[in-house]
Length: 155
Image (cartoon, rainbow, N blue to C red; front, side, top):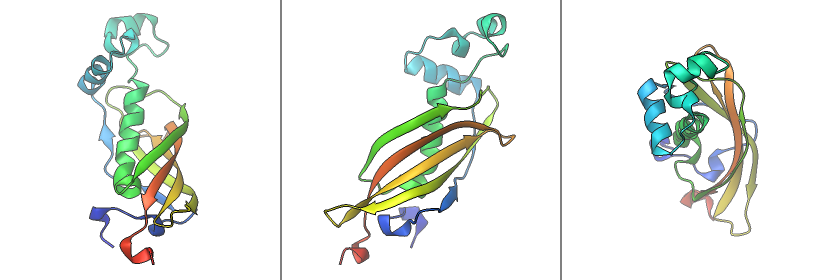
């Protein structure tokens, strides 16, 4: 099985954990562009002086939606490269602050694998955790992914 082509439903079992690689360092430019692109005008993300004066941490926080997007993206190669669909995202939890210059590393654990009535696909239930460069949890979420079975597994 070539991981460059992604995994199929039959390649997963409950309890498996995948450490996604590579990590990603979030720059100030990443945060500002993402915030502006998504029309998030919260000054805690785009105004250094405001964040220093009014913010709890005394410096800008990275937009949480950017951290979520990076964590999802990091998991694609190992989890959902062949997905028919991401059915839902649930329990998205921001567990700690992320700052400019922090690096994000993610891992995913398979919680459940179940076939569907169609037989040519199945649903994977997975939890993904993002940590910073110090190993501190900064975000987690769960999702259901609809994956096809490999052609050799459809018999």
